[in-house]
Length: 271
View 1: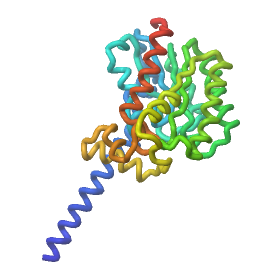
View 2: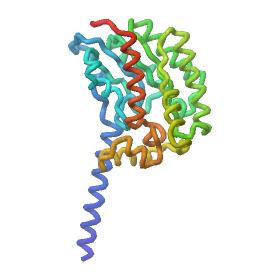
View 3: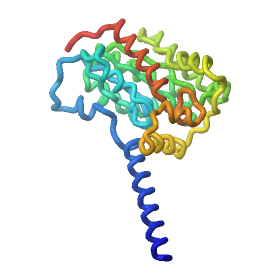
View 4: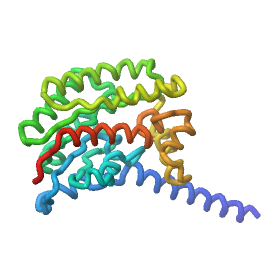
């Protein structure tokens, strides 16, 4: 009897570890669809469609939460573009600044979107350092390419808009808007659209309380239980965010719509 219990427990533990490992890989290790390493590597055959590079961190990579870049890629209205996903989990502006040549410039893009800074805020990167990094990225892309560029404001962190971290976030979003205006590039108000959506909803949501465990639990609901990202958010009492950082499908659609509208009013040339 004891032997049978031990065997059962061991099998259950193995199943849990296997499931956790699979969720961890799908969420944190699996690269984005059509990353620069595949689309823009030396020796790769250039296509005829103009390239749109979406550069950023996990909200752009789309493995934890909605994949708005793939949504644009799948939309028949945008079949004339090739979308390259240059999002990497955990990146800050300093990380993107280091890889901008390999992951953006090397693609010879016709258009570039930048959604970067959430991890700077979370990690306490000083605002001036963030500003310097973002300005350097934009200036480098402008100097080395002829791409149209769009900067996106950062989504809320948690859904309590009066929380301290969201008051801090406002300074970073102000910097994004100022840099876009100074550089003569587009500004896409992702934060503003999401704030409007939250205010039209059921009032203040949960305060920011992101953790690796919370992110893994959200991913497990999606990959193991088959819940949509919208369902994951609702299960946690949220409207737009699955874990206080990453986007559900509704929030992802806000970002995708902003980018789609920008592309439609600023057509890029064919290659």
